[in-house]
Length: 155
Image 1 (cartoon, rainbow, N blue to C red):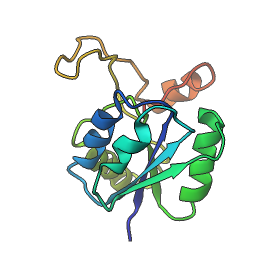
Image 2: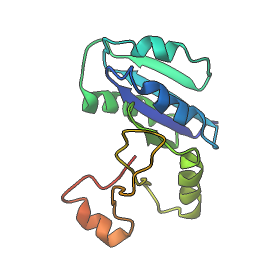
Image 3: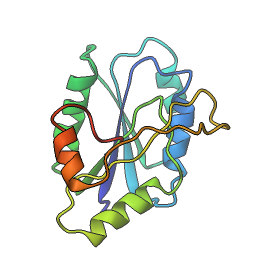
Image 4: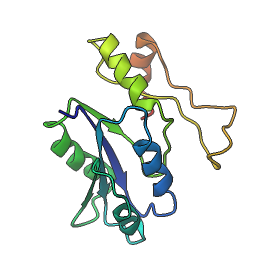
């Protein structure tokens, strides 16, 4: 049974969704399903996704534009009963190849763990990693306090 689903909402992401999809499909951990939820894109997003021939990729298109929050909730309603883990990915993001391997290892090492995030960078060029990365808390006490005031998980 596949334990991991990846939820990727998209809206008019044609200019960068290919890099995002490729970074997911090229993970070192390969036993997952990628669900792309299209929020009524008017660009070539659907054509780009249709160009992939990978049985792990599933494309769903909203009947009407719902916005990212409702699109994510729609995806979660569908995925949570069927998968042990759900990973988030935006259509303009890129993941290192070992992302899922390392995150799942964290869950295996700590049965009490319920969320696992990542650090991130603002990129303008995938070939140049900037020196400054986002600083998310990585200890329990700081994380609890931080969650009161901001988004504290990079997905």
